[in-house]
Length: 174
Image (tube, rainbow, N blue to C red; front, side, top):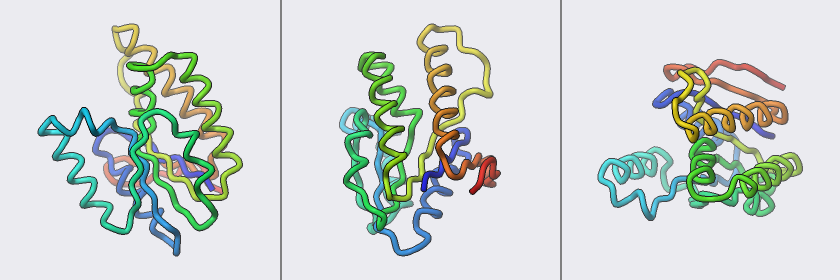
């Protein structure tokens, strides 16, 4: 089962994904795509990390993986509910620090792996296509790549939800 959860900044998308992953008797895993080692030194980012940890609670296993999400898929079984937060940050990591060829390969491997995984996946991502077109090449590339990623995920997802103001809007359901 794959559920794509999108929304803007502070829309409630992470809270929605966490709450829905908790339904049932699943083992809970949270995959964070932020590069915490570098970002945690910044006071504002450290506060965000702490807030997210408190929201999740101690029942969640944490995996920090900024690049190779595809390498994690096979460790989960039908007993697991996995929240990946957030895919647009994962994309940013690739665009800023890795090769675009590597990004395409990783994205394809991740999408393929999701399709065969027996786990419940809750994929959190920021909706970036509703704003203005950025004036930088990197900004436009980010908007393009995130739009294409969201389209590909929506095509394979069992459910797609857009969260606005803390209110889930079901765009696709089984």
